[in-house]
Structure formats: C-alpha cells, structure tokens
Image (tube, rainbow, N blue to C red; front, side):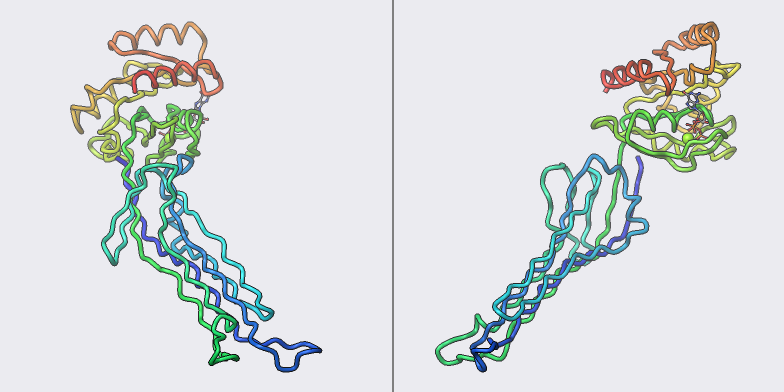
Amino acid sequence: MLVDNINLYIKAGKGGDGAATFLRNSQTAKGGPDGGNGGSGGNIYFQGSTNVNDLREFRYKKKIIAEDGVPGKRKKLFGKNASHLTIYLPLGTRITDTLSGNVIEIIDTTTPILAAKGGKGGRGNTEFKSATNQAPLFAEKGTPGEEKKLLLELRLIADVGLIGLPNSGKSSLLAVLTNATPKIGDYPFTTLEPNIGMLGVHPIADIPGLIEGASKGRGLGIAFLKHIEKTKVLVHCIDSINENVEKAYETVRHEFAQHNTSLLDKPEIILLTKTDLADESTIKKNIKILQKKGKRVLACSIYDQNSLGILKDELRSLL
Ligand SMILES: Nc1nc2c(ncn2[C@@H]2O[C@H](COP(=O)(O)OP(=O)(O)OP(=O)(O)O)[C@@H](O)[C@H]2O)c(=O)[nH]1
Ligand SMILES: [Mg+2]
C-alpha cells in the first residue's frame, strides 16, 4: 500500500466589484448611472483521472488559487466571469477539509466535485436605480471566493507488484507496461521509493531491489515489502543473463520469508527479463530451471512488443 499525504491550500476567485459610474458623453453631461456588474470568481473543482497516479505534483504546488472575476465597467459593461480551475487527482484520493472535518473521496472520472466556490460579482450602480434614487452613488463589492485548507491522502493498493534483485529491470518494465516514468539506471538501487503506474484500471508498483540480507538491513532493507503485501499478483523479475537464476529467485524468496511468509503464497509469475541480451539456449535453460518452482514462467524484453503483450494478457487474466 502506497501512502501519500499532502497539505493543500485552495482559494476560489473573488467576484469582480460592480462599477458606480454615470453616463458621460458629448451629448450628456449629467447622465444616469451606467455601472456594470462584476464577473463571478473562478470555482475550483476536483476531478478523478486515470492519467494521474500519485500526489507528487502537490509536493511542490502547495497553493492553488483561481482567477478573480473582472470588475464591471462604465456603459453597463459586465465584467468577465473568471474561468474555473480543475485539479485532476488519482482515483482513491481522500480529501479532508481540515477546518470542517468534511471528507470526500474521488471515486470516478466523470463527476467534477466543486471544492471551492468563486465569489459572486457585485452589482453595478445601474441595478440600484429606483424611483426614489435616480443616481445611486454606490455599487456592490464582489464577494470573496471560498478558501480551504485540505489534506489529500492517497492509499493505493497495487494489484501487481514487481519484485526482484536490484537492476533486474523492474522499473523498465513498469515504464513499458504503464504510463509511469520511473527512474531507470544501469546500476543497483536506482529505485529508492516504490513507483506506481496504471495498466488499464490496475495499479502496478515496482519496489526497490532486494538483496541477500535485506531483512537484516542490507541494501535498502525490506521495509518496502509492506507496499506489496496487499497486491494480488507478484511478478518476480530475474535478469536473463544472471548466471544463477535459481539463486537469484531463492535469495528474494528468502527475504520474503523473513518479512512476511504470506508473501510466499501469493500468485506469482516468474519473469526472465532482458531476453534481447541473452542467447536462445541460455534463455531456454533458465526457463527450464525456473519451471521447477511450480510457477508460470515467462520471458520478455522491453524491446520485444510480442513478449510484453503475452505478459499483459497473462496479468489481465490473473486479475
Ligand atoms: N537490453 C535490455 N536492457 C534492459 C531491459 N530492461 C531493463 N534494461 C536495463 O537494465 C538496467 C536496469 O533497469 P531498471 O529498470 O532500472 O532495473 P530495476 O530492477 O528497477 O533496478 P533497481 O531499481 O536498482 O532495483 C537499465 O540499464 C535498463 O536500461 C531489457 O529488456 N533489455
Ligand atoms: Mg528500479
């Protein structure tokens, strides 16, 4: 389970002030009131989106402020309404209004949720003209936009967890299977924090590589295993050119056992990665060795679309 907590301040736009003006032109020296109304301030909406996977963007963007409405003008000109702002959030985001305690959850991609309402535009003095007051000197002010201090929380339970030794191609796979853009590097421990991406409606997470002794704190340790405890399927990535694929497999399984033995019973696909780097006989030999584990064994390369298609189909049918 990946948890993201973010504090966010939002403020809708203020309504534009109404104008208090009087008609003046070459024919009219002392005309009647002609002040227009102010425009309304911009609303802020939340909307669920499957193109957003996490709350990363809000780690730096702490304040979101919508535009103000434009003030009214002379000649009964109305000020323009400000445009509204929509903030896209991943499905499953919980939003708590820290003042009122109200909680809403983003559950679909279709319904925009009004988070902060823009202020109303003030009426211009034209609207206050009456039988008893032909020349009102005043106009209304626009009202302020709503402002809120929110806590955004995302608890994403990945359906698929990509696991394996460091440098076995987990993040590369996440990048080709989903819309995620994790860091990829030709060295161990490129991934320092789990990444998540969506394969259709299914969240997939990669986690930092595990090494022998991870359960005793070696490498980045095994704390990240908690992120994959609730996944439905594990994809155990093993580099095709690893000289001892069985040892690679058992090393990771051994660290699982130290953390939580229930991980050992999870449905698992064993995936030989980077097949473009190995010759066919090595791949065949390694598949044979791994098949002895009694699991489904697949082989793929991020450069071989066909192999990725097979993997995707297999995952879809398991989910
Ligand atoms: N030729 C080839 N290289 C690959 C393939 N998949 C991954 N790589 C390379 O292998 C290296 C490691 O890839 P990563 O995806 O960062 O591996 P990782 O398992 O996420 O590594 P850590 O985050 O360090 O645990 C990078 O240099 C990738 O470009 C593949 O299918 N073919
Ligand atoms: Mg990685």
